[in-house]
Length: 301
Length: 268
Image (cartoon, rainbow over all chains, first blue to last red; front, side, top):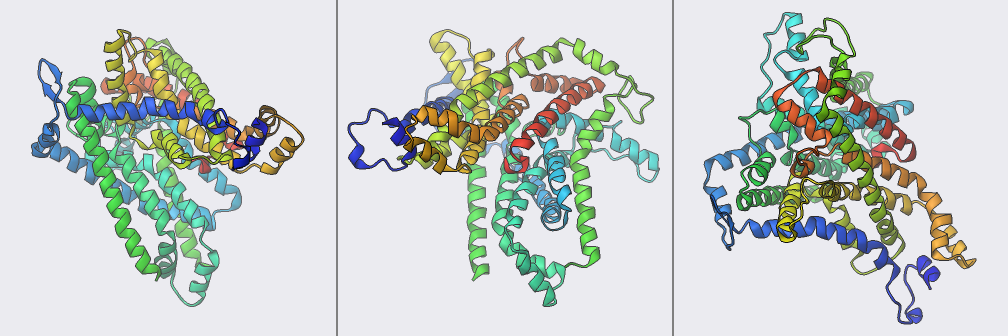
């Protein structure tokens, strides 16, 4: 029975002589169970706890209240944290798009074939060196006695910039993490665009900018959208970069979740923060997606 | 064709962006050889002392060992769970298939800090329930890391399975081979590159994880990434750079190896 099932995608009803367990079920269930137990279950528990009450000294008190969410909305400090997270993420994402597009375009349209895969590796390797190592490296570069300061002093033209522990440094750090994702996503969509379309527009006298604006951009929009969403989500959830490069005075959402859950042991509020972070990210990306899709439909008509 | 200056502009911008991406990597490797006692530029000379010092520090050596153990076990977990699941997802139609596929990729989408916090809370509740420590043990760490690696395995192996020729399996079946034999003798050899890439990728993803592990490490059981971050909070010297360089070399080697089996650019 098993050999027939292994090759037949649609087991015919005729052969349904009281099957024990369908093989697909047996193959997929351990992994499914694992994810349910290690991800969905804990998330559900966490959501339930976000409705509990935190009493200092008593840890957590069973309740069914929205007061943790209300506290977030009423607290100027946390509004500021969310606002910082939003603008830092928005700016980093925009910079990624602006810096990533030329690279993706070059990779697809102009790079010599030998260099395509080499460049790809050069772009992806730094991505996987780990957040801790990359952050350390940016600290070495941006620090007061760092490479950048020394380089600027050596030219004698600039007064040393104080970048470490500023939002600017966090944006630099985040952009360097997210750029590879943006480039890979954009490259994927650009590869699918017929080069003849661009050549045709150009032969009819369109300038290169015009070709980009009227031909490439509309066709690449789904990929631009995907890359932008990905980068935005990644930076909304960034942890190591804001903590180490932003310094103690700089606050973003993910480090606050850690702070509340693991350090302050205020599980109800920490859980509420986590769900607010995910909800804000989800709502913003969905709305942006819908708006741009609508625009895109109008464009393509 | 574009005007020459347009081409040149793209090449220049690309070079600048790639240089920006590579700058931290090159910078930290360079710094690891400085002989300056306090980290500063330019170098006064070069030395390998920081490597010796880093290996002599318990936090880094133990962290490295823990990370290698964790990553190796996480790889086995993710392959053990992910390869059969990928087989089910690509070879069978069943109710809820799309839902299961989404679910198996979900650990990649849920933010690391949120997933880590949720696991941490669940572990502590289980500890209270069963009076047995989980958070801060290797077991707890392995659950988290298996979860991190699983979606990458599913992604790479399903892609590999989708690219194989089903008719060979059908031919084997029609000649009377059992499904286990078909898997062992036909399917497995043809998806071996995907599995190797999945294994290497799982190892790397687990090795460099920071956000989930930070909740789950305990006294005396710290992964290398957490050791690095803890050290960085108070110090910044070439010891960290030496550790980072070793990590870069190891991961670089693994990734270049996996690139031979599945193009890195396709894994994302």
